[in-house]
Length: 201
Image (spheres, rainbow, N blue to C red):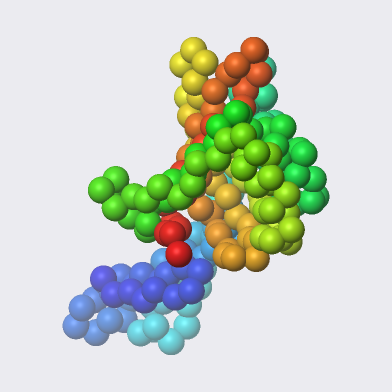
């Protein structure tokens, strides 16, 4: 087997006749978008001078999480409101998605909790002022997300999303975010979130 990795995919070669290398088979994987990739096989019987495609498949990523009840829909809406508030410069919408206290922590580019960092914890007036600061100082903001998983136990929920977007300070692509939410008076609120690929300045 021989191969080469290239941007957006890779090629693998299998040589049937090791002495002459007359018959060769090539496998190509190419990502057309982050959610669509093509897998093709090709055959050469003249030492790799010409190739004939023998098989073609196109794969599309299907969302791995589908809301199954009203509670899941509400959790999705709360996280969506948080992002939309930042996107549309509506700090009051961001604040409506947050609980009485809000904490962020960073993975510091590590999956080992020993290396994680506390980023900030907000409550009271500091919490009320923070969404306005984010809109003014960190914008423009964009983000698209998919929910990967939801785990609910009583009044606690853990939601994992995959996010792509940017603000003034950084860009992110297919980054996983871990959200902690709590229910109070029959309403879900965001209590905090964790980002692995970020560290404190």
